[in-house]
Length: 255
Image 1 (cartoon, one colour):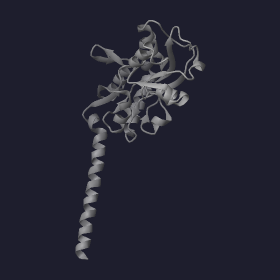
Image 2 (tube, helix red, strand yellow; image 1 turned 180 degrees about the vertical axis):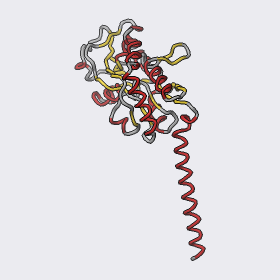
Image 3 (cartoon, helix red, strand yellow; image 1 turned 30 degrees about the horizontal axis):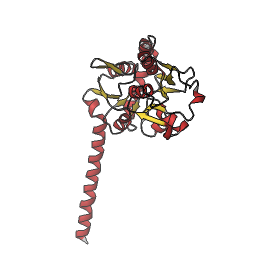
Image 4 (cartoon, one colour; image 1 turned 135 degrees about the vertical axis):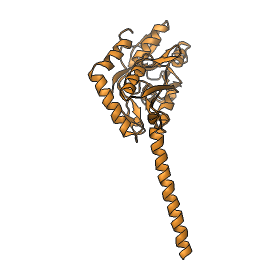
């Protein structure tokens, strides 16, 4: 009996030590990049004017706002360009500190990550060919719809018109190419990149009626409440002093 008690004591001690080590690892994972003086931002740089490439550099509304937030926190911003549907899992696993990619706050996403206060409004619109029979949102029923995978355009269209009528592309460029080649009848995407795609591709237009309106915010790991507060505090200051609006006007006013 004494031996059994001794064995149980050793096992319980080992479990306790393992639990402490696991907690320590979790905290380390949450704060490692911050402790190194970096703020790692995940994005999908195919979404002008929010994030896109200028040569080898990722620029845009989100990139500039993130830089100002990092500066306020005394951190160096590092941007990782990944597939859009890899952003939230990466934030959940603490691979990235924040996710910014013209990301809409939805109930589904709020179950997986936390969000900052909103810093911009987005509008989902429909791109069609100039000679398309689709004249309004009411004409989308039964049509082949192209979207960027895992975006709100994807979520809304799949809910409204059924998964079988939605073709998911890795990015907006591919969705527009699908429209041009006749693989889909329209593309649902954010208004600002939609304007850029239409300007760059002859024979396309945007329907007059918006498909949906939404709030953009920064995604963060649910357990990292300290970073969420710091990001929100910085964001409030940047909104109050006009810095955020100045960045938005810089990119959108020229469109």
